[in-house]
Amino acid sequence: MAVDTEFLRGIDHEDLSKMRYKISAATIKHEFGTLREGFIETWLHNGNNNSAVACTFEPVDVTGDGADEWFRTIKPDLTPNFTLTSAWLKTEASSAMRALDEIPQMYESEFNMGGKIDHLEKSYYDQAYLGKEASLSLWDMNVLAEMLEKASKRQPMKYENDGLKIHDGADKYKSYIEGRRGIVIGSEDPWVEAILLHHGAAKLLTVEFGKIVSEIPQIETMVPKEFTEKFLNNKIQQFDFGVTFSSLEHDGLGRYGDVINPIGDLQSMAKLLSVIKPGGLMFVAVPTGDGYDGLVWNAHRIYGKQRLPKLFAGWKLIDVIGQGSPPKGKFKQHLWVLQNPNGCKVGN
Figure 1 (cartoon, rainbow, N blue to C red):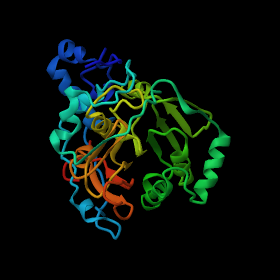
Figure 2: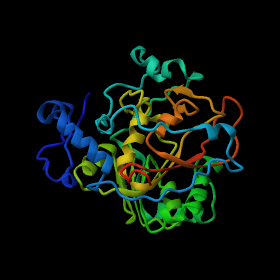
Figure 3: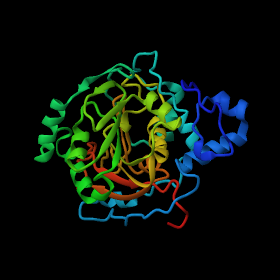
Figure 4: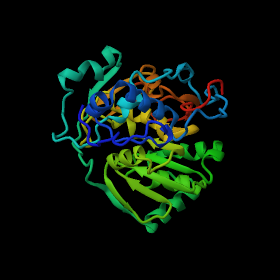
């Protein structure tokens, strides 16, 4: 597996709280061996803590008036079917190839989940910009002011009314956002950030494929490779909450210059188990239909009864915000609310 970062040099094995690594597959397997790999996995499960911490879990609310019957059947897998270490080894270099207009034959079975995908179609894009400048590469106070005004009036900014569900989530789980630090995964312009700041978030870090310069004091921006290096080297602490809206479904399809990876979305979500504090919340919006699973190559995935439990593996599903399913073959973006049990004491 190709990896750009070089972690794990100079680890103090007597103090796991100081462990941050420079990881390469060869380093793990040959230089430090299986025992050290176990240390890494333990640390990724405990985050910044020497041991598990006490957590208070929110009551599950997936049976409200707006929850479709199929929503209630979603039970996240207990754990991802890969280690967190391997998820952090996910390559974040840009692909040297143009976006592929067909699924590579060697990956067909993985992309269609062994034939479990209900809906396959093609909608091709070649929009490579991983590591290049984002479409809106400068975020300044003028940009933010315009979006804050819209946020204050709850006007749609992106994804029509679906995007307004972030307001609903922030209202319902205010104590997790107000005065807290959050991370936003995938944001070409600061519309999500404006909503979160409107609801009282103190500081935000946005991780986006394209390079962004932020002149907004409350918002810091990074590309994925930079974030991984800093987080694993103890330069970024865990976050109280996270938000990702219409981003994960693209991961690993190559549309934006990323390397083809059938489980890229699952790995990115699993990494957040280490990034969000134990007991913290993750708000996730991805395309969902009426329970079916789909792949529109290379545009996006559609999540249903098969892939959602895998996407949410290791998390505790506590809520889904949004009403109704779209017509068959279409999709909406509901806001799924997940709580992180990773690093919590057993029994909490």
